[in-house]
Image (cartoon, rainbow, N blue to C red; front, side):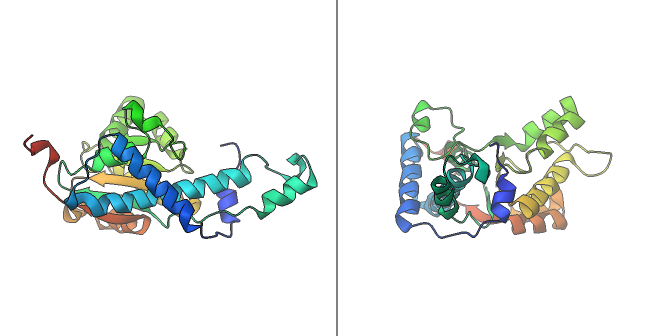
Length: 246
């Protein structure tokens, strides 16, 4: 976007969206999941409900920000004084309080769920009637690979996304690669996303196959503490979908 989302959010007095607006988006996202073949299972139902509710609130918030800020950046850009007054009175609906971290065993649908809801699923049905423009999707391994190939260029590109909501899949599954001869590259990127959350209220959504204990062992207590501050931890339970018999 060409306007400063950060500045707009800092000045915002958030309002609560009408219940029907949130519910309409919830229904849209459930429809997208169904169209993409995401199966309803009792053991993952609460996880899906939490994720869909998050994406619905995020979409309602983004729409309100774009409606208020995108067409008119300054009073001088308004075609008429009446148009300026209308824009000034438009509400900005509250964003989610923090991002999400989906954790659980392999094959519980974490990656597929986030891919579909982020608009990064490959199936054409998913692209119909998307309530927002989508969220960039990475895996921790792809970030490490980018750094190994491009070094500082990759780091600068990643850090430039401080005002952007991101999804990072397979957290903890990457190879151990150090940056600047000290911390692993993903540690550095997690700290960067923590700063983006603190300073710009930018969200990160993660999926990991690691337990909370394993996350702390891999990234340190300090990193996991920051993950708790910036994300709601959502357990993903159930059997491995890939091992189910037809």
